[in-house]
Amino acid sequence: MATHLPQGTADAAAISPQELALATRNHGMPLEALAYDLTPAGLHYLLIHYDVPLVDAAGWRLEVDGAVRTPLSLSLEDLEGRPTVTSDVTFECAGNGRSLLEPRPLSQPWGLEAVGTARWTGTPLARLLDEAGIGDGAVEVLFTGLDRGVEDGAAQPYQRSLALDDALHDDVVLAWAMNGVPLPPQHGFPLRLVVPGWYGMTNVKWLSRITVLDEPFTGYQNARAYRVRQDADDDGVPVSRMAVRALMLPPGIPDFATRRRFVELGAHELQGRAWSGAGAVEHVEVSADGGATWAAARLERPAAPHAWQRWTFTWRPPARGDYELCCRATDATGAAQPLDAPWNLGGYANNVVQRVPVTVT
Image (cartoon, rainbow, N blue to C red; front, side, top):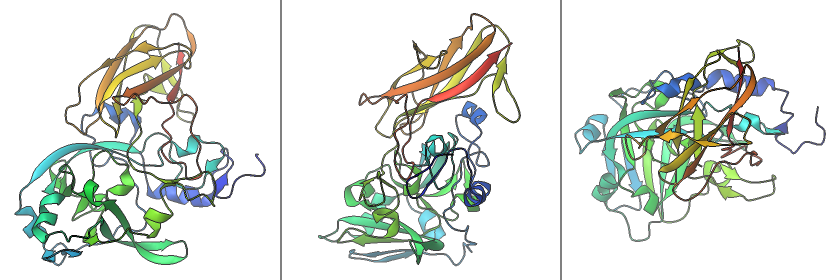
C-alpha cells in the first residue's frame, strides 16, 4: 500500500466503501456496446450526482429569468411546440479513466466505460434566449436542475453555467427525447441540456431554470468541482471540452473475473470508436505490442458532426501467446492520446491510451 497519499486520494488497489456505493448507483457502458452507432438508453453510461427526482410533467415548468427583457415560464408542451432539432451526440464523463490513476482520486471509480452516443431531440437554446431577450450586461447562462444534495457542507441544487457565447452556439439543445422516446427518468426527464463536445457534467439534467447572469457564477460545480488541479490549494483550470480518445471493442471472449480476452490464432477484425471535443478525429492507430509499434486503422467519417467515428483494423497475431492491444487517436488540432496517464487531483480528462490484454490460443 502506498503511503503519504495526497488528500482526497486512495491507493489504486483499495476500493473504499464510499466508492463502492457510488459504483452501484452509476454505471458505465459495456465496451462491447461500442458496436452500436447509437447507444441504447439502458447501456448508455450514467452518472447521477444526487438523487433521481420524481417529476410530474403536467405540473413541471421551465423558468427563464435573470438578465432578460421578457422572463418565460414554459410547460413541456410549450417547448415541444417550438422549432425542433435532432442531433447525435457523444457524451463522456469528465472522470472517465479515473480508476487507472495512481494514487486514485476518491470519487466514482470509472474504468473506461463512461461514454455513450445518443440521438437527442429538443429545441435550440439560442432561440429560446432570443425570445426572452438577453440583457446588455449578460456574461453567463446558469442552468439549474431539480436534483439536490450536499457538497462542501452546503445543501444545493445541481447548477452549472456556460459563458454566454458558448450557450448561444447553435448546436446547444434543450432535449426532451433520447433515441426517439421521452427522456428516461435517469437521463433527465422531462428536460435536459445537451452541449455537444463538452464533458458530461455540462449537460444538466432535470432542468428547471435557466438564468441569464450579469456576473460569473461562483457556485460549487463551477468554482470547486470539475477543475484540473494538482493539490487542494490550487485554483485549477476548468474542465470543458472532451479530450481526444479512441476505445476498442475488446475482441474474443473474456475471463469472468479479470476480463482478460481470449482469441484463437487467425485474423481478427478489431473495431472501436473515436471522438474529440475539439473537432473531427484525423486518424487512429493500433498497437499489438503495448505501444512499442503502431499501425494505421481504417477510420470512417462521423455519421453526425458531434458523434463518435468508427474505426477498424485487421489484426493477425503471428503466434500463440500473450499480447497487449492498444489504440490511440489524433484529432484535427494535432492533439493525440498519451501513453502515460496525466494525473490530477480530481482524476479528470484522463485520455490515456486503452490497453487490452489478450491471450491467443
